Image (cartoon, rainbow, N blue to C red; front, top):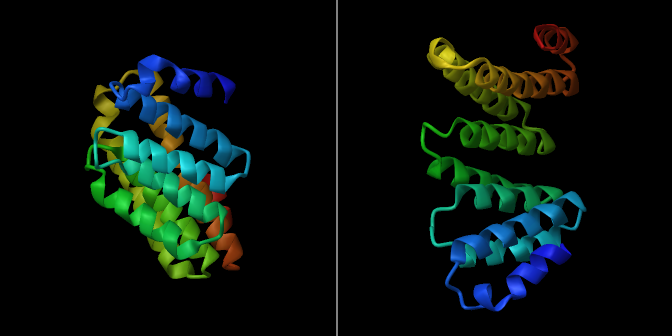
Length: 178
């Protein structure tokens, strides 16, 4: 935190000539405060990152806003932020799409909307499976491991959902696949 603040206070960055760098530092500060379970401070840095950023379409920052609202248990605001980010992510941004879909499922679980949560988790899994099937022939082993790891999270979320929903047999099926 001290390092980031020192960088942002340097004359070079105070001029506003490097908005991408400044935005990135503010975003990282926000991420640190989220991890420290200080969502209000995180939100102020994410707002500053969005203000400084040269690009007005910032889906990852919208995800961060959703994360802040999720931590604050503001489920509707969180859902709106994740939906906004999902609309912006292109079809080629697999990580962005699956993050949003998974987070939307988590919100729906908090709202006890298990059927909606199931839809989002299954959608995230479908995106990951499609990505794997389309790229399996053309990827190096290290990237394949990354793609396979991306398949685990939606399965874990499905297992957790089925468990919470009282469908233990389906939860166990997901665990067996993992």
